[in-house]
Amino acid sequence: MTDPIEAGFEPLTDAGPFSSMIGPTYQRREADGSLTFALYVAPKHLNARGVVHGGMLMSFMDQLLGRTVHNEIGRRPTATVQLDNQFLAGVREGELVIGKGNVERVTRSLVFVTGRLTVGEQTALVSSGVWKILGV
Image (cartoon, rainbow, N blue to C red):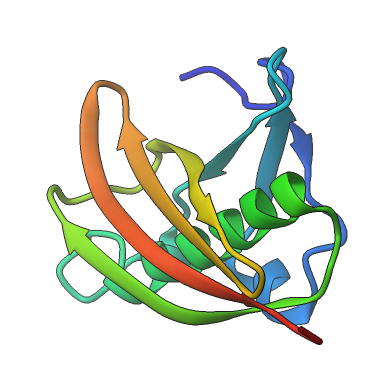
């Protein structure tokens, strides 16, 4: 398994108290300006069946989609309004989860975004969400 730092990722150090509990998480800026995220699965991420807890994956997705929104619209304050998730495969300890978000549409006050978490070639979670731009 490739260490995400060696693959050009940097640790997220400004993710806030809750998000820091799910990490460490990593971010890499791509040549096109988009962001890619990474997370190594540790024992603390597992449920009683030995796979990553769904709430953990949704928290990681919420974090990466929020950062994707901020990257697209600037660091304007936003809040998650809706986040829909479809679990497609289990994720196990020691695996490297890669996440990517995509802004689909921006209106005056809302941002529509989609995301995908993968382990290797396997998609583990796909999500779609709506973020509210605060103050408008």
